[in-house]
Image (cartoon, rainbow, N blue to C red):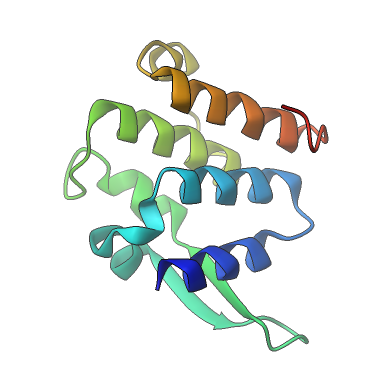
Length: 123
């Protein structure tokens, strides 16, 4: 199912650099693989005009659930907070987020920020 959701998330974000960056982070963080996330916060529907399946995330609800009814590690929480901020403009404390990311997730965030700024395909 996650392969389907990954494609549907990318389809919904296509053309919006911040949404694309957020979709990439969400997928890299393996959130679509989690039933407690995907089942609660992702809705799949036919995209307008194309009929292609598109997945929409309820970013507000996902953000509100972090640390409450959505269990996760500190690193997972920080990665999702940055993802939510890129996707929906919900503020994140970058000092806290950056200080708690491991090397892999720090690289993912850096790549997402570059993508959101229009620097596609950069390492």
